[in-house]
Picture (cartoon, rainbow, N blue to C red):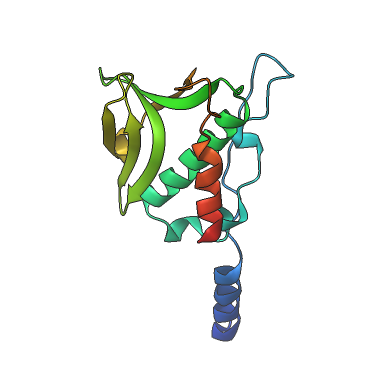
Length: 160
């Protein structure tokens, strides 16, 4: 006969588990070059991301948070003459210079920016269709510093 746990212990464990921060999700990457720059998968999540359990996040919020981490990691590897852009896989939308990123629960992620001609551009993407390629493109002007949206995005995550 299997002994049932006391209700008090079950409730106490559930309450304690609810207060524990989110466990790190599984992530892994391997590169040909053992000296390759650190990848987003190998870095710890920002505290603001790991504080909320995954099952309490919408697919859009969780996709947004990981995009922020990937964007920041990609920008850390750029020189002063390049900025981040995103190319869209599976379509002819071209490249969008990332000037903003957002999400709309439960399942939409939005990229704000401009295309190669400087035309204001916005892509609204369902999380199940999310497939982007981060790209380094020359900054707009040699007189100004390159924009680094990833650091602003992480700061915004941490301020919530």
